[in-house]
Image (cartoon, rainbow, N blue to C red; front, top):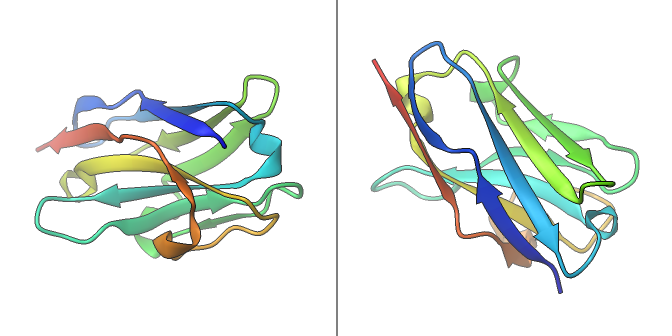
Length: 124
């Protein structure tokens, strides 16, 4: 099993940037496809970004394309989500997830392991 711990959330003004980190333990992230999801109050958890296990293919929800970048550092066993040009609608709890597969998925039901989440709040 892999354990995931997110960090890096906080309060930022619109237009600002944050970098979220997802530190894994127990197993190497090189065994997993990784994803980031978010959940705003009163809304379902939604896909944000994902990266495949070996080739590093990435995918993003349309609303963050060009602003967010997912990456991984196998040496540090950590996945990152760089978030630029943040908007108030990006406010949510952000979750890191791992899928024991080479291919990423955009459906949260396809991820077996989850972190506890980190709050991101973007003010106007």
